[in-house]
Amino acid sequence: MRYVKFLAVISIFLCFTASNVRAEEVLTWMECVKQAKTNHPDLVAAVEKVKQAKATKEVTRSAAMPDINGDASEITSKNASISGAGSSLQNSSGGSSKDANTTYTYGASIQQLLFDGFKTSYDLSADERKIIATKYNYDVVSSNVRLRLRTAFANLLGAQEYLRVTEEIEARRKQSLELVRLKYEAGREHRGSLLTSEADLAQAKFDVDQAKRSIYLAERQLTKEMGSAVFIPAVAKGELKVKEAEREQPDFEKLTETTPFLQQLIAQKEAARFGVRSAKAQFFPQIYFNGDVGNTNVNSFPDKNEWSAGTTLTLPIFDGGYTVATVSKAKATLGQAEADERSGRDSVVLTLSDTWIKLQDAVDKVEVQRKFMEAAKERARISDAEYSIGLSIYDNWIIIENNLVSAEKALVTAERDAMIAEANWIQAKGGTLDYDQE
Image (cartoon, rainbow, N blue to C red):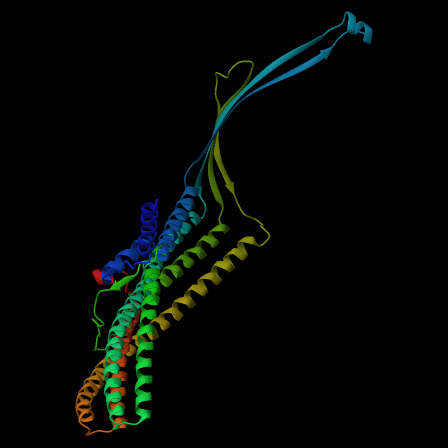
């Protein structure tokens, strides 16, 4: 029994340990893109919008197709009549007779639209433009998802690199503290320097812990933007490096024409234009072809058909101002769509200009921070040697050490920000999740 209990305890311990082990998944950028294209709910919703638009067009198309209906029935009825005089006579010698009749009916009808002022044709054209708009909406959604996904990927890369840097800083602070402690114990350094070094080490340990927490948050963000329903700790595989700086200023007005956001607004405007034509078409008469076939007979199934055929013309005379109001509404919708297009075009041009300039600034800042870091590293190397042999005082030495720490952190931040600036520039151009495969 003791052996069984021992095995049970060990099993529970192993299960608990296994459940808490971080099974990290190594992810490249293209693997993240692949998962997002399949799983992201925003993209799924955008696909469903396209399907809705296509179904709406088929509903509109049905108005131009023949409408055929059929019916058949069998109805039995009974009539009762009372004969005889007096109630007693009726009960004793009189009687009642009941007659049952069965009526058979069948028929079919057809109605075909012949002319409606081209309203159905205009509605179909409007629906086609709406389908185009929803397809561009999918590209807009995909572009936004790529931006958020790339930002999350850059944040995770940056957090991983920041953790590496802070761990190196922590190791460096430990060495510095040991050096100061030796000098303090030898009477060549005062207590203030020792306490400052201890505080610097505490700050370095805090930075390491903070970096670890930042990695967890970045993993959460990346999991969300990949559309994964289950959180899995991940390691981003890649470099904190900008691939497309595009140092030469592009033609922003020309670049605007290819953005899916503007193309979506143009398609919506064209749909609204056909909506005005459709509304005006309601002033025209409607002409239908009508046909009926069928028969009715009593007590036997009909053996002869009766049919009729003809045309029907409906001319709107007065509908309480409904058609006039519909036209006014359609014109206002078109005016709004035209204004939205103009506003969207101006916004896209401004966004392109802004994101391109910020990308250039971010790329330049990386180079500046790299130079600062290289200079700080060289100064720290020299200062370490001087402080070790007593040629430099603590105050000068620690300032140089702090400058190196700040420079190393600033370089990681600048590299991450440059990647995010690049992602914003690509999103402004309309780059979707397929951008990296083009």
